[in-house]
Length: 418
Ligand code: PLP
Image (tube, rainbow, N blue to C red):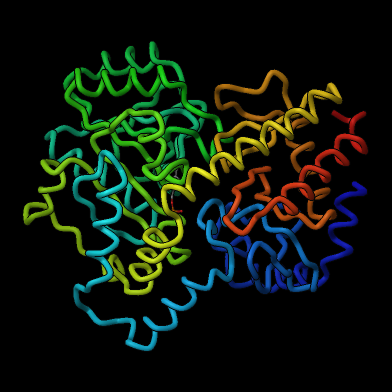
């Protein structure tokens, strides 16, 4: 109650904006993840890894735009290329050099991507990959995992059948449970067009897949003739060639999004040449902004000149070190708290041992997540409301120390509640 009161007292302008925005937008927003009680903090501007809200408060940005903000808010090379691209006009209704450049970089880096196509979002990329898999196999059903998130209409809850509002025939299996995946596949033998999976559940709480699960899905897909799709919209940052390169497991198709457009709206799907060749004329894939020049220019600069495989490796190591450090703090204090994740992505959990499967948090845990979020904001640190951190490249040692100190302070101040 006290944390919430502090939150409200410090943000009169955000509160007023929320009230006005709710008159013209349901919930006062157009992104469900940004809708939280009592009202979301509205941001005015950003610089490197800092943000300022409309009430003038400054934050260290560890939300990192849910992984899309990898380059921070003022990366000079990206700003330069965006400015020079703008000067040449943005709506040219034509193919251009930028898309060839970015496509070549992605094909060179992701083991499964022999050919690639662009879209405007990760959601679209997944819809197109599923469409391609259905066309390739001549089958309809799709296997996804409970707790998986592949975009708004491709959200698969933990309990029960799919909530997807699209007319898709989706069957769900439990994450990290290969026996369950095999059972579900056997029930739909001969009907599965695709198996789609995140190598680590992002929205589902930064829960990594076990190698055995992914390897098992690889074998299962091959056995039953389904297209294996890795949704690497979030996890592609884990190495120069994503989680697939890190683990040495190659899917048939991969979807990408988020930071790869250098901070502009972005999605991509790619895979084996024999699947992608469907788009050589058989399958249509139009989209006014698929190759928009800003995303193509920012993306090719971002991936070609900034987020090199070496930078990806360094970011991965920095995230691993941070997560171990934070978990060390919780262990030392002997509190049921910690962070799950891989590399530069992690989510706070109020359970020990840390969860290895997605689960629905109970009300007590939900209250702790809210408290953690408000306490971090009070300490000037901005995270995703669910307690997810996505490090960006401008985050350095000073910022990591600051976050670790804030977590230590949280454990100290709130220890009795944990
Ligand atoms: N797939 C995964 C794993 C995601 O985390 C997201 C977004 O968070 C998406 C797909 C959807 O991407 P977008 O929000 O760009 O549509």
